[in-house]
Image (tube, rainbow, N blue to C red; front, side):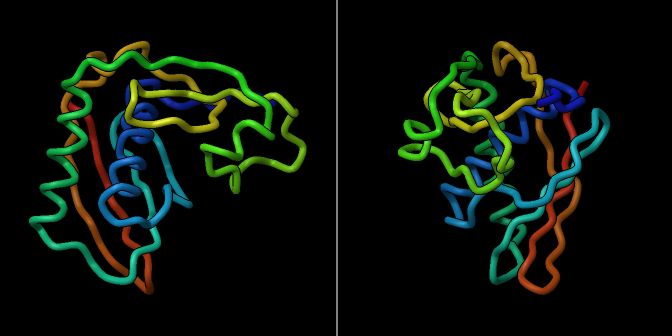
Length: 146
């Protein structure tokens, strides 16, 4: 399996955003994402558009986690172990029995092959550029301050 060519800062921010969306809206992690160094986007299945206050709350929560200076670690577990604490629905059918799990402190755990920062203090300030809603999908566009 080849490693995704994502910017480590932005990719780690995506993990934090995903967990924030799961906790705030019980919507599941992003099912479609485009992660780039300058700006990125994630799509979530939510049955309504988000209010300005909710968008601000998402932004505040993501920055709160970033500011906790959490270590970002990797570990390996079997699929049988992982099914107890991870959503494996995006795992390719040919994934090996032992999978890589990225943890952002005690906030998030996700099976992932991409690059990440070592500590959230490396990420910078997260901001949501825009949000739109179309047919049950909320798209969030975001960036990081350099």
